[in-house]
Structures are given as C-alpha cells and as structure tokens.
Length: 349
Image (cartoon, helix red, strand yellow):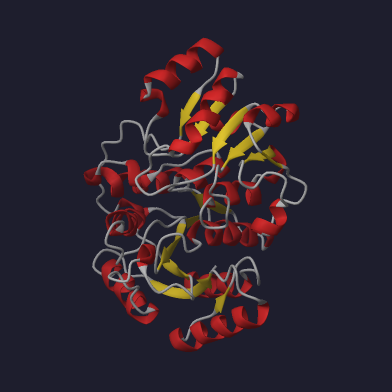
C-alpha cells in the first residue's frame, strides 16, 4: 500500500495527545518508532513525549508544520481516530499547511480526504498524495465460514470495550510467537494496524453485508502460515460497534480468543447509561456466538493498565485471573508469555 512507502513521518495530534485520545499516533510511535520524526501539537509543544505517552523518547513535539519541516518529513499522518471519523476542525489548518509543503497525508479517518475539493486541489497542485487508509476498495465478498478450512491457526483478540488493547496484544503476541520459532503473522483489521503493518483492511469501513467476507479474505492471505493473530475491533456488547465485532467473529472463525480489557473502565464512552458488562459474562457471550459456526474458547486475558502504578496494576491483573480462572497480564507492562503459552496449549503447537 502507498502509505507504507513513507519513512519520515510527522504525526498530527492537535490538542488530543494522549495514550487513548491519540491511540493511532501512540501505536505508530510504538511500532514504527524509527519512521517518526516529530509530533505536531500546539498545545503540547516543547513537552516531553515520553512523559505524556510513556514512549517516544527523543521525538520532538512541535507547534506547527512549519517548525516540523526542519526534520525533513515526507508525509503527515493524522494521529487520532475520533468518533464519527471526521477531520477535527483544529486539524484542517495543519493538513492544508502540510499539503502546501508538498507532504502527502496519511489518514485513517472515515472521511475520505480525496473527496474534499480543497484538499484534493492542494494535493494535485503540490504533487502530494492523499492516502485514505480506511478505504476498503470494492469488497463484494459474502462470508460462508471458509476460514475454517484453511490450515493457518487463527487467534482473534476480542474486547470488553473499544480501545482496550486488541491491536497491541495481537502485535505483541505475533512478536513473541516469532521469537519462539513459530511462523506467525499479524492480520490488521483497522486503520492503525494497517498503517503499522503496511497491509490490511479497515473492516468497519466495509459495507455490512461484506464485512465478514472481507475478514475471510484477510485470512486467506495468510493461509499458509502456521498461526495468525487477528486484530479485533469494537466489543460485542458496545451499542455502537458490536456489528464489526460480530463480523470478525464469523469471518475469522477463530480457533482461540484472547480477551482484552481495561480493568478501571466502567462505562462505554463514559456514558453512565451504557455500563460495561462483567468480563465473565462477556467471555461467555463471545464463546456462545462462535459456537454454532466454529467453537472457540477465550484462553487468556490481556489487561490494559495504562495510568496505574505497578502495585495497583498487579492487583487488578491478579483479580482478573481469579475471576476468569485464566492467565492474565498486561502485554506492555508484563509481556505476553502467559498468553502465548495458553494459545499454544489450546492449539497444540
């Protein structure tokens, strides 16, 4: 894909820099660290990126695109994924400035930048590309459980909520599996995962009839690998995003699942009328939904404990392990060895 060619990125987070509020930027910094030359955020300019995110030592935060140009970038990547997928008003000026400098724009928004007349005209005038990562292309595939017949073992990360660490857990499991000598692949099903890996499909942008089929097509691409770790999306009981979650369950036909959760979170999108169901209930729900097509168990719990000190994080993780009777850990804080061991035991590899 075109966006994979860019290797000197500036990440735009204008007014939203944070572990969860700019999760696209955070993940790109974590997994494409050498390709990031600066972060553009006027509200955080001059501060330490490592103090804000816990990663990114040495990457400067600058106030605007003009200041970032001294680092010789070749593209600007929009580092947020706002609800609704539109371009935040505060980010339009930096995007326009970047295009006038001849920088290509990499966007994971639902809004297609190339459909914006002003941005399209600027890109053409200055020889820049508009890379709409969330554009799935002409997908017209209806799923029929074909993934079940493929030799690759399929591990799907699922979640109690959105932004709970499904992509990070999948990437960390893939890396650990490779270190253990397995032929392992990562399957990106969201825009940030695709930005990191260089290929994939943002399943939530596919027409609903074809979303599971699109997931099936991704599994076919890695059919000859020993094991693949599929990035989950949404949550099966989230009122807004359950559809994409179910499409992945039925398109991937997982052989095993890892449950991802933020143990401090009580409500979906901070709405007190949308409480997050207990993790035990959600595990049962995921397993029930896979059972008619291809039975699979949740074999471990990945806890996102960002913001907690070590003592409190460990207490929360231990409580999750006790409640679920499953191995539990924070993939970033503790590594994923217990989760990989559980996957290998379940899949006999």
